[in-house]
Each structure stands twice: as C-alpha cells, then as structure tokens.
Image (cartoon, rainbow, N blue to C red; front, side, top):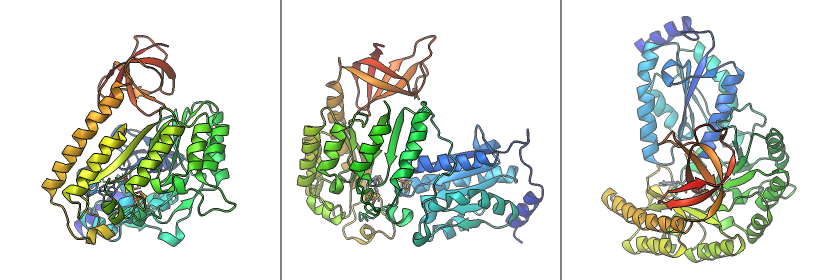
Amino acid sequence: MSPEDSNRAMNNRQRKINQDSDIPTYYIFTYGCQMNEHDSEILAGQLESLGYVPSESEKEADVILFNTCCVRESAERKIYGKIGSVKKIKKEQPHTIIGVCGCMVQKPGEEKRLKEKAPHIDFVLGTDAMHLLPEMIDKASRSNNTVSRILENENRPIIEHLPKTRKDSFRAWIPIMHGCNNFCSYCIVPYVRGRERSRQPQNIINEIKELVEHDRTKEITLLGQNVNSYGADLSPEIDFADLIAEVDKIANRKRIRFMTSHPKDFSQKLIETISETKHVCEHIHLPIQSGSNRILKRMNRKYTREDYFELVKNIREEIPNVSITTDIIVGFPGETEEDFLDTVDLVEKIEWDAAFTFVYSNRGGTPAAAMSGPIDEEKKKKRLQELMSRQNSISLKTNQSLVGHKMEVMIEGVSKTNPQVWASRTRTNKLVLLPKKEEESTKPGDELTVRITEARTWTLFSKRLS
Ligand code: SAH
Ligand code: SF4
Ligand code: F3S
C-alpha cells in the first residue's frame, strides 16, 4: 500500500462529516460554457438532495467537485493547477472527497493522466454520467483508489428530472440537446460530449412551464452546441423554429434567449419565427470562426463568408435592432496573412456588436491537430491583438450609437467591480451599469427603464428612468 493509499484508508475509517456541524458541505469549481454552468446546477442539486449544503470556499467543504472544460489548452492548464492546489486540503482534512467531472475527463486517455498526475482525487465522473454522482460519492468514501464512471457514446442517456439547484433564481439554463455532430476540424467538443441528442419537446416545455408558473424565473436560455439542428434526430418532425414558437407561447413576459447558432443551419423560417415571437430577445450569437473561405473549408464549417454575410443581412432585415455577436479563431494551421486580412475585412464589413476572439489551440485527436502549417505563438498573439483592437473600436462605435437612448434592462446583480452599482442587460444582451439607490427594493430579475449616458467597448452606463 502506498503512503497515499494508507492515508486514504485511514481517512475513510475516520470519515467525519463536518468539523463544526453534522451538515455535510460541498464546493464546485465550474469551467467552460453555459452547458457546464448548467451541469454544475445538476451536480449541486443532487448533492443538496443528499443533504449537502454549499460551503463558502473549498477549504471547508466535505465534497469538492471540478466541473471541467477542455476546449482550449489554457483551460486545461488552469484546471490542473487548481486540482493540484486542493491536494493540501486533502492532506489536512483527509475526509474530504474530491471529484473531477465534465468534458476534460471524457478526453481519450485523460482519465489515466488524471489518476497519475493527481492521485489525491477520489473519483472521476463523465459528462453524461452525472446521475451517478451519489453512487460515486458512496463508492469513493469506501474505496482506497480513484474510482471512475465514464459512459461511452452508445450508452449516453438523456436523464430527465434530475434535481437541480439553479445558481440564479431569476434565470434558467435549459439544455434542449446534448452533444455535437459537426466536427469542426479544430474542436474537441464532439469527441467529449458525444453525438447530438435532442430532448423531447414535451420535456422541455414542461420544465419551462414549471419555471414560468413559479414566477421568479424571468429569463430562459435554451442551450445546445448548435441549437439550429434541434430535432434532427426526433420523430414526429420538429425543428428549432417550431420549438421556439412553442416556448414563446408559454413564456408569459419572460425573456427567451438561445445559444449557440451554427450559421450553416440558420433557416429563413427561424429568422421569421424569431421576428414574430414576443419574448425571444433580439440577440444572436453567430460564430463565424474565420473570414477566409479557404480556412472555413479547412475548419469544416460548411459555409462561406458570402453565405454568412447574406445570413446577417437577412437577420438584420427581419429583426430590427438585433445585436449579433460572434466567435473568431486566429492562427488556425495554414492561416496566411491574406487569410487573416480576410477576417479583418469581415470584421470591418459586418460590424458585430461584440466578438469573442481566441488563439487557435491544438487539440490532440482533432483533424486540425494533424494539419500542415502550424502558426507560431508570436504570430498568433500579434494577429489576436490586431483583431481585438479593430473589433474593440467597432464595439465602441455601436455602443456609442446608443447614448441618449431609452432602454429596458433586466437587473442581473451587483456589479463585480463596484458594490454601489447594478449590472443589468438589455434584450440585445448589452451590459448596462446603473447606480444603486440608498434604500431600495430592486432585486435581480427586475426590469427597469434607463437612459444610456455613456458608452465603452464592453459596457454602457445609464441613469434610471423608472
Ligand atoms: N458549439 C459552439 C461553441 C463551441 S466552443 C459553437 O459552435 O459555436 C466555443 C468557441 O470556442 C468556439 O466558437 C470557437 O471559437 C472556440 N474554440 C473551439 N475550439 C477551439 C480551439 N481548438 N482553439 C481555439 N478556440 C476554439
Ligand atoms: Fe465545436 Fe463546431 Fe460543434 Fe461548435 S459546432 S461544438 S465549434 S464542433
Ligand atoms: Fe468546454 Fe465542454 Fe463547454 S469542452 S466549452 S465545457 S462543452
């Protein structure tokens, strides 16, 4: 038995729930996209149905979970660093159970690597095995080794009705589908999240109905890696436009959002449906990834810059005041200066409200990882800087055009940088700050009318009219 093992066996014998009380506590680190944010709500919900309560920090938790992301190497590095840092906690409070969940653990070979690099973790749990969390905690508390459950593609079920503890009471993430079939050549998500599986519309509608009845939920965000292909695997036939029209009918004054949209599947029917609905917000996140047709082809995105341009034109024609945001990757293998300039050119022509820009990160096992012409880090960074500075001035310009306008905003919470200020969002998803009043009953989820007074690249400032 290694010292690590004997330590663990001893801990399990003396497993003690909480130093100060009998109520067990948990702490979850969440990385990655909204889908992971939501999965963490399911992990939390299950722990709470076992009697756990959240703890202030990881230091006093009985169960520490890492819900991981592996979309870029930088995310993985950060997560490994954090997992390493809780080793100390395990040493000082050996009864603590540490679990690693989420996308990273689904990567081929990663389970083994985790066990080698971080032997202090007690269990590893895959993305579609979250319903097995109670079983894993039980097993881990009785075992001397790291235990694991990862479900492979053919056995990934959609489990309905899992308990969830939503982080914010005023908004709800609703996954409408899981996995991805697109295999963009740079992306690891299809490998770790498996094939596309749509939830039955009735299950989605029932979940939303329940939220709407409890009037506290003011905003619903429908989630999927590519919501535009919702329903392709279902019968009877239904598509995303049909679903969103149904959701709109029951939404009762709530805001409806959705993400992410793949340009190749954004139909005219969907554009028209959005423009006809009352509650669907005028914001579309529409990742382009590159403005060069040659690179788009190598990325396996299945549209051209001309297709994208046409789509944006149609969306803007049908949905007045819509805001359109995007994701862009720079430094994809083989990206020449000319390809990069095509992207810059599109940035200037489209004038996105905001763009999330990323340096290409090599993901082992994806087709792009084996492509010729890797771009060196310096060049990638330089391109990123240049792209960001172009986009930032455009974001600023679009925001400046709103100064003086009256807008409806929804309060999201206190600003992260100033406790005297509320952070809120317009229907178009712009962040608007407004001063808090001394004594007031305003709370997250409330809708207010403001006048925009000042614009910055990522933020608008306002004064309150109601
Ligand atoms: N399904 C969504 C989101 C996928 S991940 C979509 O298709 O838009 C979010 C973003 O991360 C992507 O849009 C892409 O811009 C970026 N991304 C994905 N893989 C990447 C990689 N290997 N390197 C850098 N950025 C990447
Ligand atoms: Fe990745 Fe492409 Fe799927 Fe988005 S659509 S998750 S970028 S493979
Ligand atoms: Fe990351 Fe998984 Fe989302 S890899 S971006 S958390 S689907």
